[in-house]
Length: 89
Image (cartoon, rainbow, N blue to C red):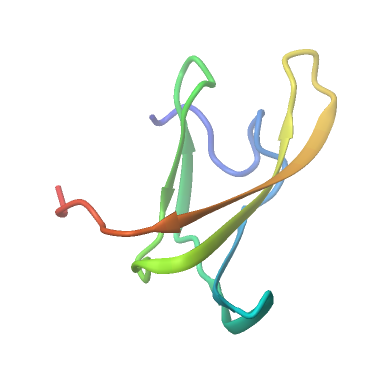
């Protein structure tokens, strides 16, 4: 996973991670989470984020900016839930 770092395609900036609980459709206990490092696989299909303070949460949002194969930038955000973390490797 050593190919890319934040200045190499396909990433255009550091991802922004927000963890929060949704309480009656509002954001409750919202906090930004630091991304310590980012690496991209040689085939550009996998992005590995090192997040020291990651923990189970009702909602996590990952906002990111990437480049497509021709080099055009685009931005997306993904949301999910972390029920349980895997053991450290």
